[in-house]
Structure formats: structure tokens, C-alpha cells
Image (cartoon, rainbow, N blue to C red):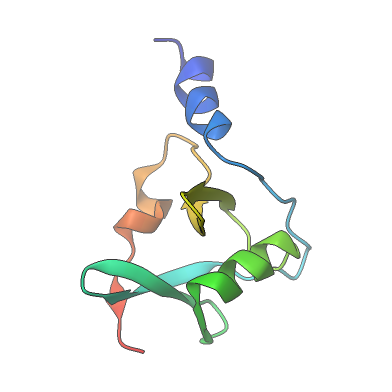
Length: 96
């Protein structure tokens, strides 16, 4: 598979990829309940719920993520870029 296709196909699974503002924060940790992501720790040390994270991303306040959904639940996903270290799944779990 060529490199363009390798990153473009996963991008198509995202509902929206907002362009972040210049002062946007990044996600530095995941809050989990029963093994599922329930929130995000941001680079400014705030902890927000999954819904708040989606709202912030949609408002261009979080960089490096796109918005996806499963059934009626929206959530954030890393924007595919061939770098594993910046994937949300590579981030540490933090306490709320």
C-alpha cells in the first residue's frame, strides 16, 4: 500500500478534522473508566470529559485530533500521520 493511501484511508473514517487555532492545546493523557476513555487530560493540565473534548476540538481548541462516532457517541481520534508516539492510544492513563 502506498504512503498516501496508508494515511488517507483512516482519515476518511473521521467525521470532521477541525483546523486548530494557534493557541490550541493537545491531549497529554486519557481518563478511563472500566477500560473505556471517559475524558482527556490537556496540555494546560485541565481534565475534560469526552463530550467536552469533542466540543473543544470542534471549536478548534484541541490540535492533532479528528472527531468520529460509534452509534450515538462522538469521540476523538488521532489524525493518522505515520507516527505512533502521538497516537491517543500511546498516551498514559491519568486519574480524574
